[in-house]
Image (cartoon, rainbow over all chains, first blue to last red; front, side, top):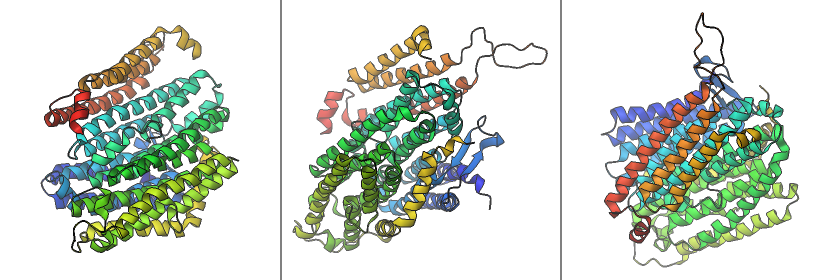
Length: 495
Length: 119
């Protein structure tokens, strides 16, 4: 089998799906859903093949139009990219299976456009994981953002306002990134990641280089909602349609974090390791403040989706902390946490969507007695909440575990303490959620009304995936460690 | 590069343009004005890229038989910015569509009134 087309195929498959929906399925929700599911399944198969191929440290490269890098635009997927691509394709697949009933409830008549937009988002995110070109990355970043603005804006209520604010902030983030690319391009004359990494060796450390690095970091920080650049996130997540929130909340911020990681440790570290420590200090500090502030804000929320949104800010803080630590364990924990948190948070948002569909409310008090009316959803919620808190054997425990090892490796007891304390904070709001479900008497007696099978299947699959990811953490983390080791030793810099 | 920043006027100009854009986004309360500020900021970045491609005494980068080699402008930033302008137009389209939706729902585009009405 020819693997080399995978980096291009990952983008083309959902893009074709989106165009096909626009062409032939705008009036037929079922056909649109079938197209969306099948094209994301194709992506999942390709991403799985890439993961299998790159797991042992392989790299798949594809040159668009046959032009070799650095002259042409190169697509390149490595171990970490394959992990993220598999996550994106799997979550998209599940969400497309799930989406039908909530879409008919939340945005009737807009079903087919939703699938088309969501596929565009998926195509762009996959493109970001599988590109080796700084400017190509910018274009994919903007495509994913534009699709996300449209998806968020299609929710009711204040959604259009939340989406517009996100558009302003998100475009500033992307502009910062583009400005940083301008600096790198001016200094090295290249846009290919590997080529830039090589060229940077001949560029002396200067103010311009530092400004470029800072701009790239700030841009990606805005996009990954790193504290204090998280202002856009809570409203956007709360007002977006449930299926869109699961897709955006589970994936978008993680892909930006991956880009930040690649730029810091794939491009800059091999040539200019001395520039990184001040930046790392800032990123770890912001990560810690984000963890604590996000958790504290989540405690104060009564709206289920808003609670989950603030908890996202806290968990993006964990990822930022891992990236800021910059050692083997820290980076591996960051990647593993992207997967663990992506699956857990998407599952929780999907449950929130199901609860809103059945109970007509997002208030946490409406969850009372959920284990009697929707037992399977309640069980899945418990598993996902345990993973968010970090209780074994769920995936969330192991990502926090490796993050703590990373803190100790770096000799930072203070950061270790923050991670432990944040576990208590997230236990506070998630256990209170569970208490409401199991021990509060519901206001009105309700019948057993579990969700329809496709929705329930996706939710339960998410919960099962969390346990499987937790139990299989040993081989997975070894693969991830191998992949990050490749990043950190600057393998990217060798042509 | 640092000397370049200190001596070349166009970088200061794009910097000033960018600050004007930021002022529009942060200092104005009308959503359309904020959007215009965003556009000005994006334009500043495009001008920065274009100004990087300039070579003194350079000419259009077309190689033709019979014409002696000359100094050429770098064509790459132009191509990149063509794409960036397309992205900018896409962003503008989505932003204006959202502004129309906000106006039809809340009846205003002033931020302080919007905050009151969206609560």
